[in-house]
Length: 302
Image 1: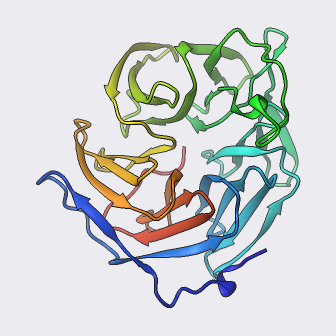
Image 2: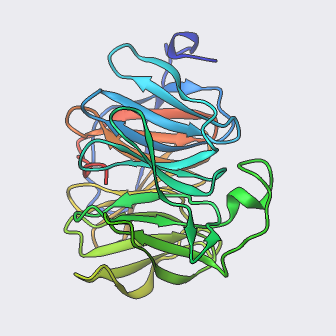
């Protein structure tokens, strides 16, 4: 498997920012590093501050990989990995994962054991959980499109048992409920900095919708707020939204006006912030993982 030492990083690619609005004031590295290549379709980056490492999924190769910040090396974190897609880190520093192959959402405990958080709804198997976030109250929110059962490429071809592709919420006590049932293919999702709003991507319809989050965990609203297509999404501390797209990373102002683009040489799937100050952007893009440090600071994983 390729590691950082196998790559030619003597000539990192320029940080190709396209500034579309005068409010775009993000600076940082002038070059973008590629810290891994050799995957088939990379997804789900999640940074662990305590261990100073990044995990990410190589879905068709059925493995989770781990980049060590201190050694700059990449190794296998878990293989086979049940065709895992999206990941996040909860408030206790545990890995929460969407497993497309096993059609479940799991949590990896500190001792390495795996706890199943959700694998069925009303006695029927989930489709193929895709992306996940954790709310302030510890509830786990995840999207459940059918990509992992559409073919054998990113999971196992199977009949869909659910009546649709839903967005779910599972409470710390284990209660699973549908919070949105009118998506075609729900994908990336992220809470705003104040946790009052939840944005959710519908990758089939090519837009993002915004919901108000009630104290009871119920959603209201759901209007389309961005018409550009996206995959994974994250917010920074300034309320700007960062999205993974076919062209690279798009950056939106807090009012969701597109203000800048970071062009990358591969189709971008997902992204997260990490590093000791959470000012390092990690991007999974097709076969590679790219990174650069910014003047922007991301919200904690969750």
